[in-house]
Image (cartoon, rainbow, N blue to C red; front, side):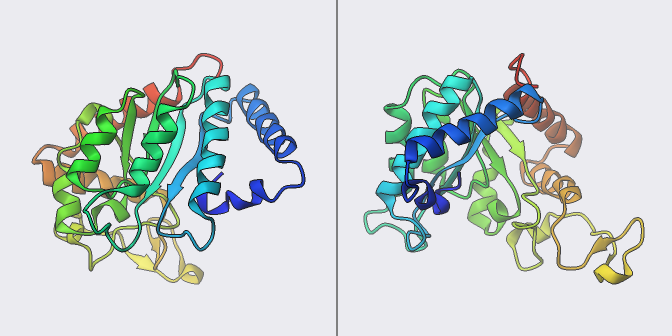
Length: 243
């Protein structure tokens, strides 16, 4: 459950029953080979108007326990407040680390998706006892600082995302200087094979994210793609009964 929607769990007449229903859905998905992770769970301090921090923390703790019980990895959301902390800290990451520290062991680890944090935050994520990979998409590559941080993600911890239909690469982003030429984009009503829909981020755009990462790292795109593919298989599809 996304942290900005965690209030729906807290507001349920019986939160335990709501969590049991979530578990049932996950277990059914595992049996069908369709559920390979628990999430999107985490903390979002940029959208506290939707859900306060304590409620987010409570929902995250429930989902951490669920992931541990089911032996599934976590798909994690981490977003700091729009205004940086006065002391330069990372309150949302602090909250995530605290939740992980008090959670049951996570046999499959997880991924912090759409990562757009600082170099210091990246180092903290990579150093956590629970192995967490780092996912990047267009929103992870908006600024020159984002690019410099993304270039340092170890290839054996990197995942690539489109996060469609949101978080696409944009011409105004710093990533534009590293992005490949885009396929022709047309209005949805005029779509034809080989074209993209104007203004819409699509799964195919993950190849563009790979190209940007390869460019800022100074390596071939095939190396980046192969590493991300291997990491995705390890994280999501190596759990035996999970797929």
